[in-house]
Image (cartoon, rainbow, N blue to C red; front, side):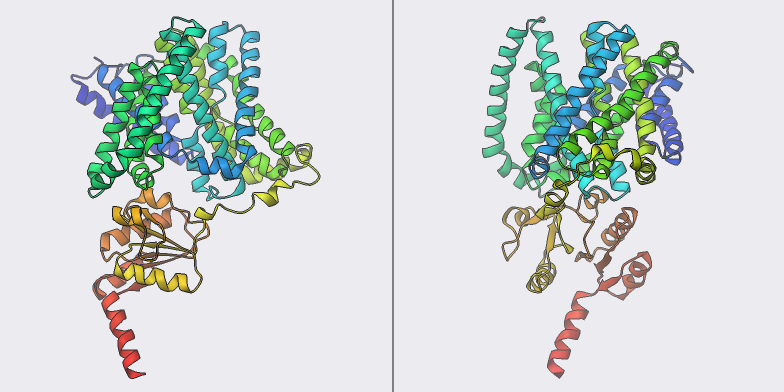
Length: 542
């Protein structure tokens, strides 16, 4: 127990400190991870001694990590890897191999023991999907060529993380015998995947269809499913994280993945707060001070070496130096997975607190520095462009091949709500040759498509996280046929906060809401019955 009389008070103080530090970080345009670790260090035994690690904090941290891996699996978009072809695999695997080998050699030269050097080297290879997606979304560059390539090799990195965790837990379970560990992992892994695949194929679709009639129940089931497979994965020796990842993958092919991801991301971020605070509270500030030199060397390697290897590989594959540079900045930091991997090694007894502190310090430095590198990526490129010609072929032919967005990312109009009014609008727009992406929270529509056979994406127009997952870059109109005023207000606010540049049409019951919706930012407010009556009268008079 820390300074406070009970755990509830301790948690309240932590949350208040995290909110203040987060606001400061946001002002400095830094990811919140930096703020949360700093709060743990400040409030922990090394500085103020206000809070201490406890079972409740550890439990919340474990739930956060479980949800993180579940959402990674849920959002595993193999389509991105397929459309990117060799570039996602080549840059992802190439960067992992390069960073781990060179990082290991640097660690050995510095004098770090071999096992600890291996952990440090592998930790340096992983980049933060959460941070990169957030920064690219803020800059509206997710759908650009370099944004899609970056997402492709980040997915490859996520898969490598899972394999590394499986290997570490299997080796620990087998007492270090590689052959026994490999056989154990193979047999258990095959059985685990077969059982989950059968459940995914024959049970989950029908069960999710029934549960989706209540979004709250659907979210509750998805969390229960993630935790259940996490426990099963831990009992099989794969770790809770791997089980949660498999749970996410099992739901990734369902029409509910986007809605689930949108609903769970805020809960994930809240629970991960406790992991990073717990991590910071366990760090010895004295040890961190003595490791500044080593951390600076590794940080320079990550900030410069990782983007360089990506630019070399992409240049060899036929991309422009600009595309390679902008995509390469996505790997100029280590990720939350690096910290999770270090924490796993600490719990297994493979590394000590000093090595964990070094990994964390490198994380703080690289995450802070790379955030500014990505925010100011275009001015930085213009400054460095004259020295980047060596990373570009004379004819960057791949730019032409991959310059077109995937077909499912292109829409002229996004139509939210596929009732009779929405279905009628969609029919007319498609007859005029426009590409319409339909969205509805009716699970029957997402399963069978609309009346014309077109697919319908499952989602809630009033959910800001779901709206952020839509391909808004090239959309001319976002149209909501929901007459609910609060839903349309939330939609308009979400689109504005995302920097949506197109036009917005919403629906109202009567004139009372029209002025308020127009003031909120709607370009067009439709009143279905009045509009229909007006058209009918015009037809009668004509």
